[in-house]
Length: 118
Image (cartoon, rainbow, N blue to C red):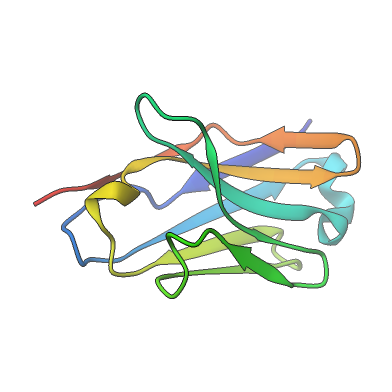
């Protein structure tokens, strides 16, 4: 069984913060540390886009639109991925999806909704 379960989404005012988590479970993720993990988002009417990713060596990359505001980290012992989102803007509103990939393997979580509105 392969599971990626996101949590932490919700409603926040512009300028506010949210912290997302993605917990991996199942024997497939016994080598969790070897996966490249990432967060993607998809707003209504738009394509899914990469927000941030982190390699097995914890090297991170960010979309230009979130640099300086979002921080991605991973805890391999807990098999959990985190996304700290600060100074949220209305354009950050979307469904956020956790992704795990390694070679040809590519798995997605179900997504968590982030709404940014006053």
